Image 1 (tube, rainbow, N blue to C red):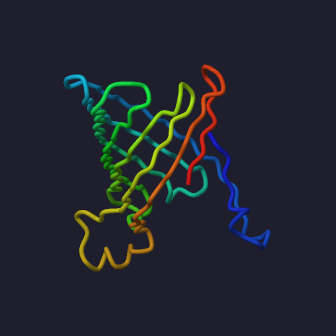
Image 2 (image 1 turned 135 degrees about the vertical axis):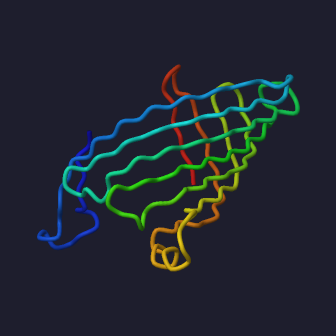
Length: 169
């Protein structure tokens, strides 16, 4: 349960609203090694989100994803490559314009530097696919289209067994 407001998005106090959101989620995953250098992961996730005031934001999201990891050489400091594709179908109870299938696809090269530091460099493509909508609906719903290309770099450092510092751009 979270309390949300739009204080950061509104200047006039009369335009500021508060709401309480409740989320419930469950997921499953399956991981399988193929030989010594390849692993794939299949996953599924279902979430339900309910807003007390902004009921147009109530939604159910169902996600399916796959990840393939390839490490051509064994060893702690040898690089490995990851490819992911996730599809999340969004079904809003009161906002058809937001409905669609979110595509998130990424590739990255990853490397450990010693026992505590891992670095990643990659490319990600995100897009809200308007499957099953007419051309007019797609045009009207374009404000919610998040199509973008991203380059990313990130690193994490393990301070203690269960404590990590994570940074990225």
